[in-house]
Image (cartoon, one colour):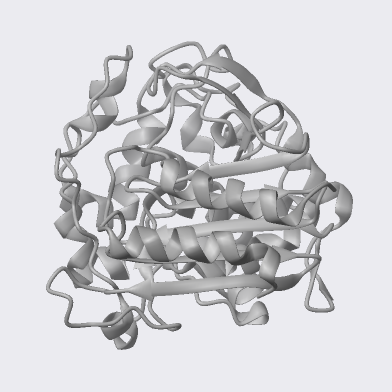
Length: 366
Protein backbone atom coordinates (compact mmCIF):
# COMPACT_ATOMS: atom_id res chain seq x y z
CA UNK A 1 0.00 0.00 0.00
CA UNK A 2 1.43 3.43 -0.93
CA UNK A 3 1.56 6.31 1.53
CA UNK A 4 -1.20 8.18 -0.29
CA UNK A 5 -3.65 5.53 0.86
CA UNK A 6 -2.55 5.63 4.50
CA UNK A 7 -5.71 7.58 5.48
CA UNK A 8 -7.82 4.67 4.23
CA UNK A 9 -6.02 2.22 6.50
CA UNK A 10 -6.23 4.69 9.39
CA UNK A 11 -10.00 5.00 8.95
CA UNK A 12 -10.37 1.22 8.59
CA UNK A 13 -8.31 0.60 11.75
CA UNK A 14 -10.19 3.29 13.69
CA UNK A 15 -13.52 1.68 12.83
CA UNK A 16 -12.25 -1.60 14.28
CA UNK A 17 -10.79 0.04 17.37
CA UNK A 18 -13.86 2.07 18.32
CA UNK A 19 -16.40 -0.68 17.70
CA UNK A 20 -17.87 0.78 14.53
CA UNK A 21 -16.76 -2.51 13.00
CA UNK A 22 -16.28 -5.89 14.66
CA UNK A 23 -14.59 -7.52 11.69
CA UNK A 24 -14.43 -6.32 8.13
CA UNK A 25 -12.59 -6.31 4.82
CA UNK A 26 -12.08 -3.53 2.26
CA UNK A 27 -10.53 -4.00 -1.15
CA UNK A 28 -9.83 -1.84 -4.21
CA UNK A 29 -8.68 -2.84 -7.68
CA UNK A 30 -7.40 -0.45 -10.36
CA UNK A 31 -6.65 -1.65 -13.90
CA UNK A 32 -7.24 -5.23 -12.78
CA UNK A 33 -4.65 -4.99 -10.00
CA UNK A 34 -5.39 -5.07 -6.26
CA UNK A 35 -4.09 -1.79 -4.79
CA UNK A 36 -5.70 -2.05 -1.34
CA UNK A 37 -6.62 -5.22 0.53
CA UNK A 38 -7.49 -4.53 4.16
CA UNK A 39 -8.99 -6.94 6.68
CA UNK A 40 -9.03 -7.23 10.43
CA UNK A 41 -11.00 -7.52 13.63
CA UNK A 42 -12.91 -10.62 14.63
CA UNK A 43 -15.18 -13.12 12.90
CA UNK A 44 -17.36 -13.64 15.97
CA UNK A 45 -18.97 -11.49 18.64
CA UNK A 46 -17.03 -13.24 21.40
CA UNK A 47 -13.80 -12.16 19.67
CA UNK A 48 -12.35 -15.66 19.70
CA UNK A 49 -11.80 -15.93 15.94
CA UNK A 50 -9.54 -13.32 14.28
CA UNK A 51 -10.68 -12.10 10.86
CA UNK A 52 -8.04 -13.48 8.49
CA UNK A 53 -7.31 -13.12 4.78
CA UNK A 54 -9.39 -16.22 4.06
CA UNK A 55 -12.40 -15.18 6.20
CA UNK A 56 -15.65 -14.90 4.26
CA UNK A 57 -19.01 -13.47 5.29
CA UNK A 58 -22.61 -13.20 4.13
CA UNK A 59 -23.16 -10.05 2.07
CA UNK A 60 -26.95 -10.16 1.59
CA UNK A 61 -27.95 -8.07 -1.45
CA UNK A 62 -24.45 -7.48 -2.72
CA UNK A 63 -25.10 -10.99 -4.05
CA UNK A 64 -27.40 -9.35 -6.61
CA UNK A 65 -24.36 -7.86 -8.32
CA UNK A 66 -23.07 -11.39 -8.93
CA UNK A 67 -26.43 -12.51 -10.30
CA UNK A 68 -26.46 -9.48 -12.59
CA UNK A 69 -22.94 -10.18 -13.85
CA UNK A 70 -23.93 -13.78 -14.55
CA UNK A 71 -26.94 -12.62 -16.58
CA UNK A 72 -24.77 -10.13 -18.49
CA UNK A 73 -22.37 -12.96 -19.31
CA UNK A 74 -25.13 -15.21 -20.66
CA UNK A 75 -26.61 -12.31 -22.64
CA UNK A 76 -23.24 -11.40 -24.11
CA UNK A 77 -23.03 -14.90 -25.58
CA UNK A 78 -26.31 -14.29 -27.39
CA UNK A 79 -28.29 -16.77 -25.31
CA UNK A 80 -30.40 -14.18 -23.47
CA UNK A 81 -32.17 -11.08 -24.78
CA UNK A 82 -32.90 -8.53 -22.08
CA UNK A 83 -35.59 -6.91 -24.24
CA UNK A 84 -37.44 -10.22 -24.65
CA UNK A 85 -40.42 -11.26 -22.53
CA UNK A 86 -39.50 -13.49 -19.62
CA UNK A 87 -42.16 -15.87 -20.95
CA UNK A 88 -40.04 -16.57 -24.04
CA UNK A 89 -37.73 -18.56 -21.76
CA UNK A 90 -40.19 -19.43 -18.98
CA UNK A 91 -43.64 -19.95 -20.54
CA UNK A 92 -45.48 -20.37 -17.24
CA UNK A 93 -44.49 -16.82 -16.33
CA UNK A 94 -47.01 -15.39 -18.80
CA UNK A 95 -49.84 -16.07 -16.32
CA UNK A 96 -51.76 -13.29 -14.57
CA UNK A 97 -51.08 -10.60 -17.15
CA UNK A 98 -47.29 -10.98 -17.28
CA UNK A 99 -46.88 -12.05 -20.91
CA UNK A 100 -45.12 -8.81 -21.81
CA UNK A 101 -42.91 -8.44 -18.73
CA UNK A 102 -39.33 -8.31 -20.01
CA UNK A 103 -36.09 -9.68 -18.65
CA UNK A 104 -34.83 -6.08 -18.41
CA UNK A 105 -37.73 -5.23 -16.11
CA UNK A 106 -36.74 -8.09 -13.82
CA UNK A 107 -33.13 -6.90 -13.90
CA UNK A 108 -34.20 -3.34 -12.97
CA UNK A 109 -36.65 -4.21 -10.18
CA UNK A 110 -39.54 -2.91 -12.29
CA UNK A 111 -41.40 -6.15 -13.09
CA UNK A 112 -43.94 -5.56 -10.32
CA UNK A 113 -42.92 -8.75 -8.50
CA UNK A 114 -41.21 -7.31 -5.43
CA UNK A 115 -42.57 -10.04 -3.16
CA UNK A 116 -44.85 -13.05 -2.89
CA UNK A 117 -48.61 -12.65 -2.59
CA UNK A 118 -48.92 -16.09 -0.96
CA UNK A 119 -47.54 -16.37 2.59
CA UNK A 120 -44.20 -18.17 2.67
CA UNK A 121 -41.71 -19.09 5.39
CA UNK A 122 -37.95 -18.70 5.47
CA UNK A 123 -37.69 -22.45 4.91
CA UNK A 124 -39.52 -22.01 1.61
CA UNK A 125 -36.58 -19.98 0.33
CA UNK A 126 -34.71 -23.27 -0.01
CA UNK A 127 -37.47 -24.70 -2.24
CA UNK A 128 -36.61 -23.29 -5.66
CA UNK A 129 -39.49 -24.92 -7.47
CA UNK A 130 -42.08 -23.63 -4.99
CA UNK A 131 -41.02 -20.01 -4.82
CA UNK A 132 -40.48 -19.65 -8.57
CA UNK A 133 -43.84 -21.31 -9.35
CA UNK A 134 -45.59 -18.87 -7.02
CA UNK A 135 -43.96 -15.91 -8.76
CA UNK A 136 -44.88 -17.27 -12.17
CA UNK A 137 -48.53 -17.60 -11.16
CA UNK A 138 -49.10 -14.27 -9.44
CA UNK A 139 -50.00 -10.87 -10.84
CA UNK A 140 -47.71 -7.84 -10.47
CA UNK A 141 -48.17 -5.33 -7.67
CA UNK A 142 -48.00 -2.43 -10.16
CA UNK A 143 -47.84 -1.94 -13.92
CA UNK A 144 -44.50 -3.40 -15.00
CA UNK A 145 -41.99 -0.94 -16.36
CA UNK A 146 -43.56 2.16 -14.83
CA UNK A 147 -41.49 2.27 -11.62
CA UNK A 148 -38.96 0.29 -9.64
CA UNK A 149 -39.89 -1.48 -6.43
CA UNK A 150 -36.88 -3.19 -4.93
CA UNK A 151 -37.16 -6.98 -5.43
CA UNK A 152 -35.39 -7.83 -2.17
CA UNK A 153 -35.48 -11.62 -2.52
CA UNK A 154 -37.54 -12.26 -5.62
CA UNK A 155 -35.11 -10.81 -8.14
CA UNK A 156 -32.61 -13.61 -7.66
CA UNK A 157 -35.21 -16.32 -8.20
CA UNK A 158 -36.57 -14.54 -11.27
CA UNK A 159 -33.18 -14.02 -12.90
CA UNK A 160 -32.07 -17.44 -11.74
CA UNK A 161 -35.02 -19.25 -13.26
CA UNK A 162 -34.52 -17.49 -16.59
CA UNK A 163 -30.85 -18.52 -16.57
CA UNK A 164 -31.79 -22.07 -15.62
CA UNK A 165 -34.24 -22.27 -18.52
CA UNK A 166 -31.65 -20.86 -20.93
CA UNK A 167 -28.55 -22.79 -19.86
CA UNK A 168 -29.92 -25.87 -18.12
CA UNK A 169 -27.83 -24.96 -15.07
CA UNK A 170 -28.60 -23.06 -11.89
CA UNK A 171 -27.39 -19.49 -11.58
CA UNK A 172 -25.01 -20.50 -8.80
CA UNK A 173 -23.51 -23.18 -11.01
CA UNK A 174 -23.02 -20.84 -13.99
CA UNK A 175 -21.49 -18.23 -11.69
CA UNK A 176 -19.13 -20.75 -10.10
CA UNK A 177 -18.04 -22.50 -13.29
CA UNK A 178 -17.71 -19.49 -15.55
CA UNK A 179 -16.76 -16.61 -13.25
CA UNK A 180 -15.60 -17.51 -9.73
CA UNK A 181 -13.52 -20.61 -10.45
CA UNK A 182 -11.70 -19.24 -13.52
CA UNK A 183 -10.74 -16.18 -11.45
CA UNK A 184 -9.97 -18.14 -8.31
CA UNK A 185 -12.40 -15.80 -6.55
CA UNK A 186 -13.65 -16.79 -3.11
CA UNK A 187 -17.34 -15.93 -3.54
CA UNK A 188 -20.11 -18.52 -3.29
CA UNK A 189 -23.80 -18.68 -4.17
CA UNK A 190 -24.35 -21.96 -2.39
CA UNK A 191 -21.49 -22.64 0.04
CA UNK A 192 -20.04 -26.16 0.45
CA UNK A 193 -20.14 -27.44 4.03
CA UNK A 194 -16.36 -27.84 4.01
CA UNK A 195 -16.03 -24.03 3.95
CA UNK A 196 -18.29 -23.32 6.95
CA UNK A 197 -15.38 -22.87 9.35
CA UNK A 198 -14.22 -19.77 7.44
CA UNK A 199 -17.52 -17.88 7.66
CA UNK A 200 -17.74 -14.88 9.97
CA UNK A 201 -20.91 -14.55 12.03
CA UNK A 202 -23.18 -11.71 11.02
CA UNK A 203 -24.12 -9.71 14.11
CA UNK A 204 -27.64 -8.23 13.83
CA UNK A 205 -28.16 -4.47 14.11
CA UNK A 206 -28.70 -3.29 17.68
CA UNK A 207 -31.80 -1.36 16.62
CA UNK A 208 -33.39 -4.36 14.92
CA UNK A 209 -34.38 -4.85 11.28
CA UNK A 210 -34.90 -1.85 9.00
CA UNK A 211 -38.31 -0.23 8.87
CA UNK A 212 -39.89 1.63 5.99
CA UNK A 213 -42.91 3.71 5.16
CA UNK A 214 -42.83 3.30 1.40
CA UNK A 215 -45.90 2.03 -0.39
CA UNK A 216 -44.81 -1.61 -0.66
CA UNK A 217 -42.31 -1.98 2.17
CA UNK A 218 -44.44 -4.44 4.12
CA UNK A 219 -44.71 -6.72 1.09
CA UNK A 220 -40.99 -7.47 1.24
CA UNK A 221 -40.31 -6.99 4.95
CA UNK A 222 -42.82 -9.42 6.41
CA UNK A 223 -43.12 -12.30 3.92
CA UNK A 224 -41.04 -14.08 5.02
CA UNK A 225 -39.63 -12.53 8.18
CA UNK A 226 -35.85 -12.61 7.98
CA UNK A 227 -33.76 -13.15 11.10
CA UNK A 228 -30.03 -12.53 10.47
CA UNK A 229 -29.21 -15.51 12.69
CA UNK A 230 -30.51 -17.72 9.89
CA UNK A 231 -27.32 -16.91 8.01
CA UNK A 232 -25.42 -19.04 10.52
CA UNK A 233 -27.29 -22.21 9.51
CA UNK A 234 -26.10 -24.84 7.08
CA UNK A 235 -29.45 -24.69 5.24
CA UNK A 236 -29.07 -20.99 4.43
CA UNK A 237 -25.44 -21.24 3.43
CA UNK A 238 -25.99 -24.26 1.19
CA UNK A 239 -28.99 -22.80 -0.62
CA UNK A 240 -28.71 -20.83 -3.83
CA UNK A 241 -30.43 -17.55 -2.98
CA UNK A 242 -29.08 -15.30 -5.74
CA UNK A 243 -30.56 -12.09 -4.35
CA UNK A 244 -29.23 -12.36 -0.82
CA UNK A 245 -27.43 -15.58 0.10
CA UNK A 246 -23.95 -14.96 -1.29
CA UNK A 247 -20.88 -15.47 0.90
CA UNK A 248 -17.48 -13.97 0.11
CA UNK A 249 -15.17 -11.16 1.12
CA UNK A 250 -14.16 -7.75 -0.17
CA UNK A 251 -11.28 -9.10 -2.20
CA UNK A 252 -13.50 -11.56 -4.07
CA UNK A 253 -16.18 -8.93 -4.72
CA UNK A 254 -13.64 -6.44 -6.03
CA UNK A 255 -11.77 -9.00 -8.13
CA UNK A 256 -14.92 -10.37 -9.74
CA UNK A 257 -16.25 -6.94 -10.67
CA UNK A 258 -12.88 -6.01 -12.15
CA UNK A 259 -14.32 -7.85 -15.16
CA UNK A 260 -16.84 -5.05 -15.65
CA UNK A 261 -14.42 -2.27 -14.73
CA UNK A 262 -11.88 -3.43 -17.29
CA UNK A 263 -14.04 -3.92 -20.35
CA UNK A 264 -14.74 -7.61 -19.89
CA UNK A 265 -11.27 -8.93 -19.21
CA UNK A 266 -9.52 -9.95 -16.01
CA UNK A 267 -6.26 -11.78 -15.35
CA UNK A 268 -5.61 -12.09 -19.06
CA UNK A 269 -8.91 -13.79 -19.79
CA UNK A 270 -11.90 -12.32 -21.61
CA UNK A 271 -15.24 -13.00 -19.94
CA UNK A 272 -17.49 -10.48 -21.75
CA UNK A 273 -17.17 -8.05 -24.61
CA UNK A 274 -16.72 -4.40 -23.67
CA UNK A 275 -20.15 -3.69 -25.17
CA UNK A 276 -21.60 -6.45 -23.03
CA UNK A 277 -20.18 -4.82 -19.90
CA UNK A 278 -21.45 -1.37 -20.79
CA UNK A 279 -24.96 -2.68 -21.25
CA UNK A 280 -25.25 -2.60 -17.48
CA UNK A 281 -25.13 1.21 -17.73
CA UNK A 282 -28.26 1.46 -19.88
CA UNK A 283 -30.91 3.25 -17.75
CA UNK A 284 -34.10 1.22 -17.40
CA UNK A 285 -36.18 3.04 -14.80
CA UNK A 286 -35.75 6.12 -12.64
CA UNK A 287 -37.72 7.68 -9.78
CA UNK A 288 -38.71 7.06 -6.20
CA UNK A 289 -38.54 3.34 -5.56
CA UNK A 290 -41.90 1.95 -4.39
CA UNK A 291 -40.28 -0.29 -1.77
CA UNK A 292 -37.26 1.68 -0.56
CA UNK A 293 -38.90 5.09 -0.85
CA UNK A 294 -35.76 6.79 -2.20
CA UNK A 295 -34.95 8.05 -5.71
CA UNK A 296 -32.93 5.55 -7.74
CA UNK A 297 -31.96 4.92 -11.33
CA UNK A 298 -31.52 1.26 -12.21
CA UNK A 299 -29.65 -0.12 -15.17
CA UNK A 300 -29.44 -3.81 -15.94
CA UNK A 301 -28.92 -5.31 -12.49
CA UNK A 302 -27.18 -2.38 -10.82
CA UNK A 303 -28.03 1.09 -9.59
CA UNK A 304 -26.38 3.82 -11.64
CA UNK A 305 -24.13 6.27 -9.83
CA UNK A 306 -24.03 9.24 -12.23
CA UNK A 307 -24.25 12.40 -10.15
CA UNK A 308 -23.72 10.49 -6.90
CA UNK A 309 -20.16 9.24 -7.30
CA UNK A 310 -16.94 10.74 -8.72
CA UNK A 311 -17.32 9.44 -12.27
CA UNK A 312 -20.35 9.19 -14.51
CA UNK A 313 -20.16 5.57 -15.61
CA UNK A 314 -20.38 3.90 -12.22
CA UNK A 315 -22.42 0.91 -11.09
CA UNK A 316 -23.15 0.07 -7.48
CA UNK A 317 -25.23 -1.87 -5.04
CA UNK A 318 -24.97 -2.97 -1.44
CA UNK A 319 -26.47 -5.34 1.07
CA UNK A 320 -28.44 -5.27 4.29
CA UNK A 321 -25.99 -4.76 7.10
CA UNK A 322 -23.44 -2.70 5.22
CA UNK A 323 -21.66 -4.51 2.39
CA UNK A 324 -21.05 -2.61 -0.85
CA UNK A 325 -19.81 -3.16 -4.39
CA UNK A 326 -18.85 -0.13 -6.49
CA UNK A 327 -17.65 -0.44 -10.10
CA UNK A 328 -16.23 2.62 -11.85
CA UNK A 329 -15.92 1.93 -15.56
CA UNK A 330 -14.31 5.31 -16.24
CA UNK A 331 -11.50 4.85 -13.72
CA UNK A 332 -11.30 1.05 -14.27
CA UNK A 333 -11.71 0.71 -10.51
CA UNK A 334 -13.69 -1.51 -8.16
CA UNK A 335 -14.29 -0.93 -4.45
CA UNK A 336 -15.76 -3.50 -2.06
CA UNK A 337 -16.51 -3.61 1.65
CA UNK A 338 -17.75 -6.60 3.66
CA UNK A 339 -18.41 -6.24 7.43
CA UNK A 340 -19.96 -8.61 9.93
CA UNK A 341 -21.31 -6.01 12.38
CA UNK A 342 -24.56 -5.14 10.67
CA UNK A 343 -25.98 -1.63 10.49
CA UNK A 344 -29.67 -0.99 9.89
CA UNK A 345 -29.55 0.05 6.25
CA UNK A 346 -30.82 -2.23 3.50
CA UNK A 347 -28.31 -1.36 0.77
CA UNK A 348 -24.98 -0.45 2.37
CA UNK A 349 -24.11 2.38 4.76
CA UNK A 350 -21.67 5.20 5.43
CA UNK A 351 -18.85 2.95 6.63
CA UNK A 352 -18.29 1.77 3.07
CA UNK A 353 -18.83 5.18 1.51
CA UNK A 354 -16.42 6.88 3.94
CA UNK A 355 -13.72 4.35 3.08
CA UNK A 356 -14.43 4.78 -0.64
CA UNK A 357 -14.20 8.56 -0.40
CA UNK A 358 -10.92 8.28 1.53
CA UNK A 359 -9.59 6.15 -1.32
CA UNK A 360 -10.65 8.68 -3.96
CA UNK A 361 -9.08 11.49 -1.94
CA UNK A 362 -5.82 9.57 -1.81
CA UNK A 363 -5.86 8.64 -5.44
CA UNK A 364 -6.36 12.20 -6.61
CA UNK A 365 -7.66 13.34 -10.04
CA UNK A 366 -8.41 10.86 -12.78
